[in-house]
Every structure is written in C-alpha cells, then in structure tokens.
Length: 286
Ligand SMILES: [Zn+2]
Image (cartoon, rainbow, N blue to C red; front, top):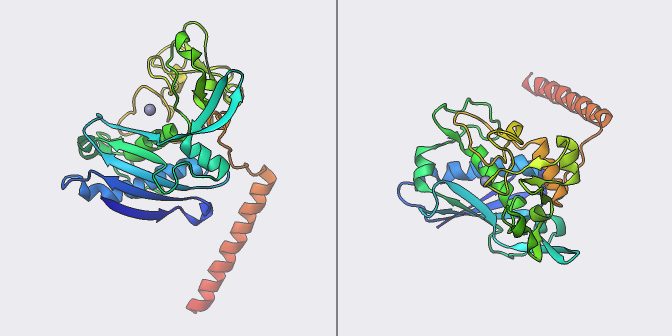
C-alpha cells in the first residue's frame, strides 16, 4: 500500500485530495505516479466548476474483479424526505454540501481498476493539467476515464433500476429522484438539465446512471463524458455543460460564473499584472 498526498492548483485552494493505492503489483507499481496526477487532473475537471471545497480522500484498488474501471462513493448521506421517499446523495456530494465527512478519515470514494486495462488500454497524458498532447489513436485517454468514474462518485449513481417497477423503492438517490419513466424509456428530468437540453435527457437504455444512446433519443449525447455507450480511442472527453446542469439538479452547487463584464475586468487585471511582472523581470535582469 502506498499513500500519496497531493494538493490541487492554487486557483482551487479550497479543494485538496489524497490518494491511497491498494493491490499494486510489480506490473502496476510503475503507474502509481501517473495514476496520481491523472486522477488529480480528472477530479479538477469537476471541482473547478463547483462551489465550496472538500478534502477528497480517494482509494484506488487494482483488481481483476472488473474488466475496466469503476468508481463509487463509499457511503451516502441523507438529504431530505420527499413524499414517502427518503432522498440520499453520494457521500462525496454530502461532504461538499455540508462540510461534514461521512466517512471520517476513511476514503470518500473508491476507484476499482483492472491492471491489464491500465497497462494495455489507458493512455496517460504527459501534461495532464494542459491536455493538449494528441491522444494516441490506439489508446483510451485515462483522464477521460477517471473523470467519467468520478462523475459516478459525485452524483451519477443510485439504487433504482430502469424499469417502471424499479421506481417504487421508498428511498432513492438524487439521481433516482431526478429520473422518470415514460413507460418505454428512462429520462433525466432535472429542471436545469431539461432547460439546457431542451427537454427530458435520455438515459442510456440498459445502462442506467448514464446518458445518451447509439441511435434514437439521446444519439446526440453519445460523445458526452457521462455517456453509457463507449469511449472512443484517441479521443479526449471533458465535463460538459449538461453534466454540470445535471450535477446541479442533483444538489451539487456550482461555482458562480462571472458576469461577462466581471470576466473582462478580471482579464484586464491579469493583463496588468502580467505587464508589471514582465517589467520587474526586465528590471531585475538589467
Ligand atoms: Zn459509467
């Protein structure tokens, strides 16, 4: 077991994370540092858009029990009663919302990762914070994979299956409460997501807690980070505006987006700082 502590970039100083590895072998140990930086960058793809902050404790377990990768919050947190149902959110979302860590010093979320998948399929960006190097055409981008899995640990998870009968549980996750069956298909019906998408968002048929389909309703979402179909090799995926709207519908608060005027002032301010720094460097170099 190895423990690696990392901090996110200063712009998101309220966020920090730690990663614990379990099950590393001689074959997978060389990937430890690449995994750490990659998972940190994948987490940042989400947290850069979120309000508040949290110390996110991540456990990565190398295992043959799954084919590729998956992740989930270790526990869930109570949100509210809604009619006859009790609503729970993923433990990580609970910690972000309340500031209380439901798992204490134990991990908040667990990533399961197949060692062969890691070695044979994943491509590790040499500059994960930049994400500008072309993804190898015959490999799957690791940051995209972990960002997808972290989406599940944040909110894209639940207990109800995608059949009408599966909706009758007396408890549900924030995902479950935001999905509705029309008799044929399941849709995500959170207000923000519907407003952005222009109607109910099609959940992947046969793969609940994902969006998009290969054909028909939701075919336009097949390339979304949280699609339930496949990740194309040689392709980089990112958190979409729709993913964020869905996250907000599920109770994870988004960071306020600066008004255009404010953003322009910030940019102007940064440009001034840049000029001052350049001037100082020129002075000191002279
Ligand atoms: Zn998934």
